[in-house]
Length: 131
Image 1 (cartoon, rainbow, N blue to C red):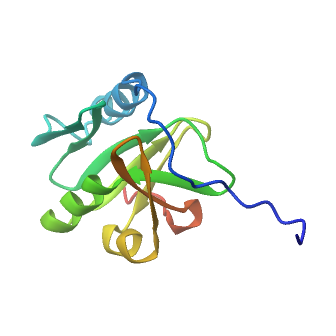
Image 2 (cartoon, rainbow, N blue to C red; image 1 turned 135 degrees about the vertical axis):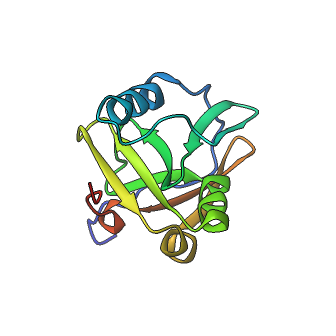
């Protein structure tokens, strides 16, 4: 072992998601008039994990796991289908990060939370939103 911390990205049982962070992310953008109504609500058997808008797919996370964050694989596939990016609200940083969906699909590492397919990637792939 070289002493470098390595995140555990093994498959895990999926806890029930909290919808509060996503609602907070939506409200912050809505109040700045960046978004209005979503085109699509993205969810699975565990609950809602994102919203599709004209310019991005919005997701939210509480915190990083080392330098790693994850997104539901279907959010990335949907973003690629509509040629938009992924916008993530990261609660621990109190800011948004924009990600290129194609890059996440190529560079991300897949695992499962319960039966939900996830893509894990380095937060350094994120950029500040254009607005």
